[in-house]
Length: 115
Image (cartoon, rainbow, N blue to C red):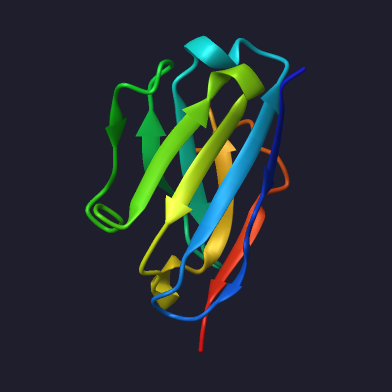
């Protein structure tokens, strides 16, 4: 049974930083491509980062490129998202997932960027 548990969200001012974590279980994490996906109120899912199994490939959409960094620790089955220079438009519920629509997802972690 796939389990994904995200944490690390919170309320931060514009320009601030947060680091999200996701602990995965129930599948072979070390060989799985992983995404961070977000959903703002009333909007569709938006993938914001992708990483391959050994962490040698990452990619980001233009909306977060240069501000977000995805990484992983396969020994701990944990995925990370370092977010810098946060903007109000980054406000959303953030999920880790194995596909860009977060078909299987945990409870998510709320990120709110507001002054």
